[in-house]
Image (cartoon, rainbow, N blue to C red; front, side, top):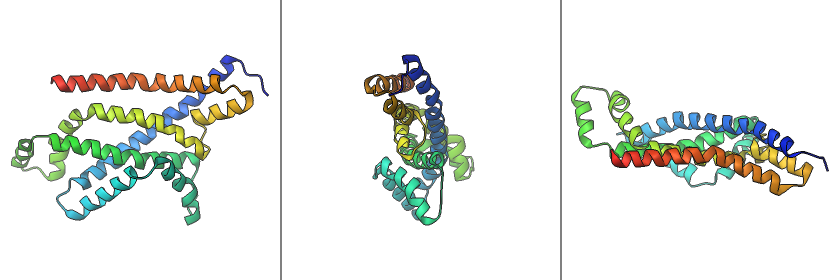
Length: 215
């Protein structure tokens, strides 16, 4: 057994937290970009893009994230595509996030009064410009609270990337625990770090929710 002081354990966990944060931000940014594309297809006037988007969302919402990460990291090499654990984690979490963000934002688009669509159409705007300039800004304002709430879920979901061998917070905690045999101390600190990351965002989401209710 290796002797680690409390500060040694805390320092290593805090150091590993940067990878959890980077993975969360990369997955959220990627999920937002792909989610916008899926949203555009989901609300298209043409049938086949709507069908594709519905199938995409059903697939990634209807299967466990753990299974998606497994297929990304262990399945793709069988098809000749070898990817690193970081890439597999980012891609898996991006697809997962995009399915949920597209649905969250779709609810915002549907909440925008029909008159706003008519007003945008009366200006002679192309449908994409209608969305970008008129509809989406209002939809994003409506769905800010659930979007931030989903970011909290995404941060916690990054812990699953440890099964791919990616050295994020939980993977580092497992290594330290194997060396120290102090699970309560190690995983207790991991829980506190996740709480410190997620609690402010949760409170911010509640603030946005109350603000939206009063406006």
